[in-house]
Amino acid sequence: MRQDLVGAVNDVGQQHLEADWRVLAQLAPTDPLPFELALIKTIEDENWARASTFAEETLRRQPRSLAARLYLFRYAALQQDFEMLLLHYDQLVELRSLNSDILSDALIGVFREAGKWTALLEYLNTHPTSGRLLVRKLMSEPIESDDFEPVVMQYIDSRGQYLRRLAERKYYEQAHAAWLSVVSADKKYNDTVPFNHEFHERVEPEPFNWKIHSPRAEFHPQGGLNASYLGDKKRLIVEQTFRTASGSQRLIIRARGRLSKNGGSFAWVISCLPDAEELLSEKLLLSKNDLYETMDAPLAIPEENCTFGKIQLWGIPGEFPKTSRIQIQSVKLVSMMNGPEPNAQ
Image (cartoon, rainbow, N blue to C red; front, side):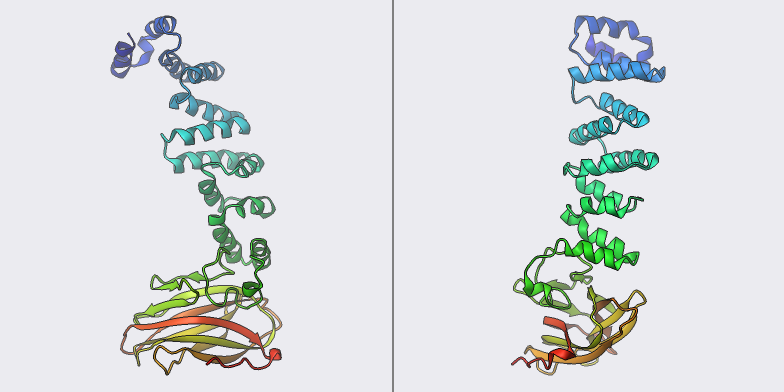
């Protein structure tokens, strides 16, 4: 009878078969099919309270019923019952029967329309299965930073995106304060400008740690930055935002490599934020193939409008493009007040 009923529903629709599914419910009271059919009928009749009853009865018989979960998810959204909404969302995620992007968009849409985010943020504090996806999608939502920041900083993969978002809006102080909350206590990295001046693999996120832009650049396992450049057009290789200290400074670079004559070159550029006023552009001039050399360039950081700066390594095109390769062991800014930096051998 069940097989015949399923076939008939597919052929003519369930509205003509109410008597049959009522009989099936009496003959097989643990079968979820009659209750799913009743759920569909009551939804068509817009009898929401009764539909909820049939959905719950369906779940008692089959907890994996997609139709029942979807209805209860929708009903909780209409009622703005956030606790039940999140419960059924969680179950729908576990069923893996729906596109997770679409389902998460629907969930966020409910909270956006209500203008209330507290329940969703508390849910994210439990680190649910879809937490990373939801956090990423919430980046563009109008949530107060004071509410969102404690949540997003728990998700390691999302920290960089969140801090970039703040920096793009020129909230450098707030971004830097949030970044400091996850910085290692290791003074080897924290007491230098820029941070991680020897290019080690670090968990601290950008933009206050290095961001590699070029697919032809990578961190060396023992520290240092390896990069090659085709010399074809100007390319950003790596960059970092940093808190500045005003006054006379020196940029000290230790590097080795092979630079082709007139084929292209590398240059470090330092500028003030937020207006990108350039303070220094220093080409790397290496005279000894594959032997480390130390370069030193002076610059002055102004007292005003330069609380934060950006340091970037660029590939500069040559007249006759040719591949150049470089390994940068370290790069750091040192105050002139500290005296001369000893030359490396």
